[in-house]
Length: 347
Ligand SMILES: *[C@@H]1O[C@H](CO)[C@@H](O)[C@H](O)[C@H]1NC(C)=O
Ligand SMILES: *[C@@H]1O[C@H](CO)[C@@H](O)[C@H](O)[C@H]1NC(C)=O
Ligand SMILES: *[C@@H]1O[C@H](CO)[C@@H](O)[C@H](O)[C@H]1NC(C)=O
Image (cartoon, rainbow, N blue to C red; front, side, top):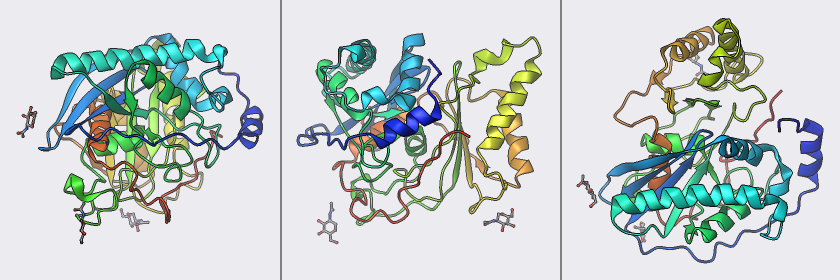
């Protein structure tokens, strides 16, 4: 499944049609927000209350089909024109429906009431769309509908590289309480509130089946994006450690991948200010050592974020926080000064 050539991706990207998602009706009658985080390894769910408490509700492990789907979302062009009639995508849609349904049921059991609406984050940016095209949102929305739920978009199409989606970096940053206006009613531009300080994040997600590496642009807002790392043709999840009898081969590959998340010149326009590990193996000492050495080599001394947030649920907590922050469409939509960062494909 990893045979998508870059030229195919580019060709399809250029041939894409502009697609507008319907955002007419948004549920606003909940005094809390429900967030799902889709990771390469699992889905997780959390709730965010008006009183400021964000609480993890649970997780559902994904199988190989789930991991494959998360990967395909980033590289496969077929989701681009999805309208529900494409039967070749039915298996994929059902994988999504099952995850959405399982997370909703899990949350409902914990909350003691049904979950009617949720926002969701994806592991990585779709590399086949270009600005203004919705490559994944339609099938996501369709799956939510099948599961009897409303899909809550958090950002407008022109706020983050074309799709009205939030990704791992947005979810993790928000989950740790960074990059958000306070109080939460202030709106995404903080017109009636306090802006978060500017930060540059280096985010490392470590799962059994993937290593996610993201370096953000200089940003004050959790809604901003820059990605690097997943999906990759290499499988650098923790389970790949023993693919080769000599584990050092694995760590060499990890190091190469970390190095690639920096510009070839090694020069950053902004110093990295915060380092966050997340995912099932966020605590892995060897990974942390590799990251530490890499940052030292690039002259970076970010603050390691070491708070009370559970690294397995950080993303879900962040998405729930977004879902609570109504309205959903007051991002700097008309004038995107510095908000949009062009993403780049893997070299
Ligand atoms: C906020 O509200 C929720 C739900 O009622 C509750 O579980 C939680 O303990 C509250 N948090 C605080 C800090 O009061
Ligand atoms: C924000 O403040 C303005 C006045 O500065 C006020 O008109 C508006 O209602 C406030 N909005 C919210 C959501 O509080
Ligand atoms: C990054 O930090 C170093 C000190 O650690 C400083 O010398 C350098 O000017 C900073 N670079 C930028 C772009 O701020």
